[in-house]
Image (cartoon, rainbow over all chains, first blue to last red; front, side, top):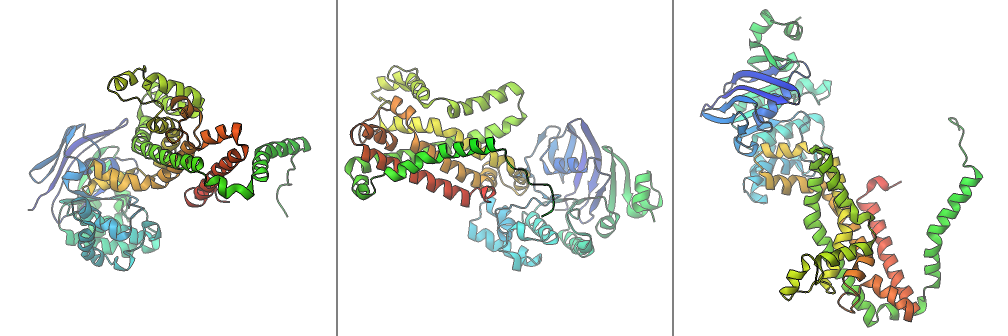
Length: 238
Length: 268
């Protein structure tokens, strides 16, 4: 039951290679931080099964989901992803976005919609259920993306800069909501960000990625007390 | 009233543009003026006209369906080919473009050489007692040949405009390849598919050269509206004009429908 996510892998995209090793334990969200171009999104794609590894392993519990170029396809590996600009389905309503995972697992339209209902309520999307993604605010779209990913009952959740698309004024509220939902989720969670406030609100452990390498790995306290690089010092400085 | 001074076209260009416009519009005006409006209802409901109309609608619908079945996958292949090397990529695009620029009669002759009774492939069908040319099926094949590029390019354009990363998002939610195609890719490109299908249908409806070469002009079997109209011109000019008017109305209706419903960018 208490499956952890273990990453020990190299991924190459174009001329750029990311090499990283870290674990994410159930109920202990890991923040993956780093400057732009550090390789965070590449690593997310590899964990989601959208990019093959060059070498190494990714495991969810005992199950090896990626071993070198061989991998369990994304639709079978049960890694839920909240993408950077959410990538909601523009042609579907909020309700059908959330019901999508249930639908593709064989539930009929009516059953999938009924099963999506508790998720809509839990994420306060009930009153928006008939809207299309183009009619949502950033915070609402983020809740749909999270509800859609969680409704697929993932073993692991990865969030790729879920706050980046939001207006500054709403970030504090949205962040607090997100932290609450992720605590409820209770399974391995990786949060990609470059905002120290996100890290403080959500994560227990921090993995710092710079130029495709991990430069520091530890708790927030350890990192802010003993920053290994100027980037870490700037991020947690103050 | 501020801003850059309005540029006026030089008189020479204005005159040339006027001539060009008149050249495009006046033939249609002449058609409308000389149309036998009084006898139009009788002309358009005569047996041969209804027969040609029915055949045209049937074959154009069938060839549009064929274009959808094979053209959408071809558009996917074409959009994927962006990652290929230069030569195969260009060859694929050229192969799809050829029917667009080829004189339709040449297309008809080429179809005969492939599918005719002594054609490369057609001889085997003929041996089996299946003659392809000069059948209603041949009309559909000829129309599909000339109309396919319209569908492929419309769908390819829609694929280019859609955010393909949502397909990856669908996969992480448990959708297999077919489900991604069915539930995400197809709806995302649906407007392009619809526009392509309408263009395809219009092109098929107006097809003349490839059809008469490959399928001939057998009343009720291969004599479609454009062919009937052309033949009537020799014997019954009023009927020819009526048929031409009918084709014009269908084309304009398609243009108007397309502009308002599927090509919002065209709206002023």
